Length: 305
Ligand SMILES: Cc1ncc(COP(=O)(O)O)c(C=O)c1O
Image (cartoon, rainbow, N blue to C red; front, side, top):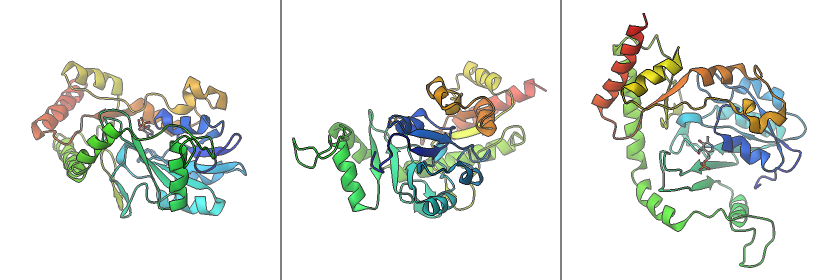
């Protein structure tokens, strides 16, 4: 709403994301236009972006999925050339950096989620939008407060989207811990890599990538594995919880069937949805817990050869 997206406009984004990314577009009666992902990073494949622009394109929403920044240089270049807004979906990526710049500080604005499971989570729902433009910030604060600067006077149609004071108080305390937690997540990711290598599993499963210049905050540690569903059952039987982000890309969801995409429209997103598995990761995870995960994965593959 704040960048002026309206009915009939198009907004380019990825089909391999949480529903809210595209839902925010569709709710304005604008059209989500999906572009397939890079199979290594799971983020928008910028080589395919250009072809998605039409004269109705109003914005791009790159998603920094799992805590890894999207390829923002190309996104910004294309956005400037086509004069469209860039809304960074940084819901999973607070603290991550693209070539030294914090995510949410590169595009027109950045959207963060404080859902309890996020790297900085409240005790309920909440979120934040970042921008460097004071005028834009003013528009946002009006929209979140029913559309007016002054009580009982409304300039535009807004909504109630204020951060609850109780959540704000909790987040304010937890915020002081964020950098330490991020560092802990990065250490845990590093240790996972070592353990997978030691077990000779780094050829069996594909580990997450961290391209040069991108600072990953490992909201999720997502591997790609053959026989993913069997592996997940095996881990579950050992008491090790995992999750699949995401089992069905958005273009194949009934809610977006009206867009007319079908099976095969975005083969990389579809392949990822069949193979990805998010392993346990949290700042206080111990080495013994990590070993238990990797050993159990090793047992699964040992039993299958
Ligand atoms: C990529 C992505 N975008 C948007 C959201 C929506 O955030 P919220 O649940 O705070 O509305 C989430 C998480 O829930 C997410 O993971």
